[in-house]
Image (cartoon, rainbow, N blue to C red; front, side, top):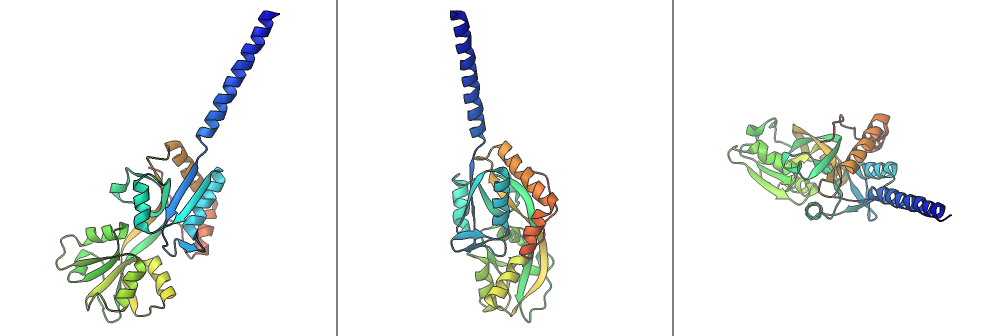
Amino acid sequence: MRKSGDKILRVQFVFALLGSFLFASANAETVTLTFATQDFPPFNREIKGSAAGPFADIVRLICQRMQTDCTIETLPWRRVIGEAQQLELSGIFPMSRLPERESDYYFIGPILETNFTVYTLAGDTTEFREGKDFAGYTIGVYGPSGISKTLEQITAGIPSVKIVMELNHVTVLRKLSAGRYGAKGIGFIDRDGAQYLMSDEHITNVYAAGDIKIMDLYICLSRKLISPEIAARFETTFAALNNSGELAAILKKYGLKPAPPQPLR
């Protein structure tokens, strides 16, 4: 009888140990993802203290499908980048893909494409297509940011170029409209954002004068905080939304179109 009792106890112990292991394994993949973004229409807006817009909608839907809790906070972009660098955030968006960012982030997407476009005042008939066209101009741009880094690369070595960094895109448009960049002043802004802001701000004397570069925008996850397994699940869930047409439906509500999919790197 004692041997039988010992055997039962051993079996109960093994099952208890196995149950503890399975519980721990399940909880190892249970995470809360913390995101931050900026007020960056039409891609993101803060409405009544809550992040809104296509990127926020997509992130929330991905988290829902993953059965993962997530939070999204809207902050000034410099603070977003600062908190990401201090490893306080699971992810940030929207972000353009630059070589120096590859070691820090998994890039999910691209979500959509936008054009980096030159804007001028009425009366300037210059057509901008490449770096040499910027010679002699004062250029307002939001930065430091992906778009400002792109501008610096395009204008490297071009004579008499002055780049003025601003806190946001709307400041660029307001100052350009008011002639504060001078007679040879232009703005360098993403086309989707510029069109939205000019309508919102009732700016009517600023015109697109040339698309310089197509830029993809992504959702980024921290490589230092997020495991490859969680990043892969996030990317797979995003791909399913893209393939099902749900991504396109979300973007269509905001007058936007999805970019061609690319593999997670």
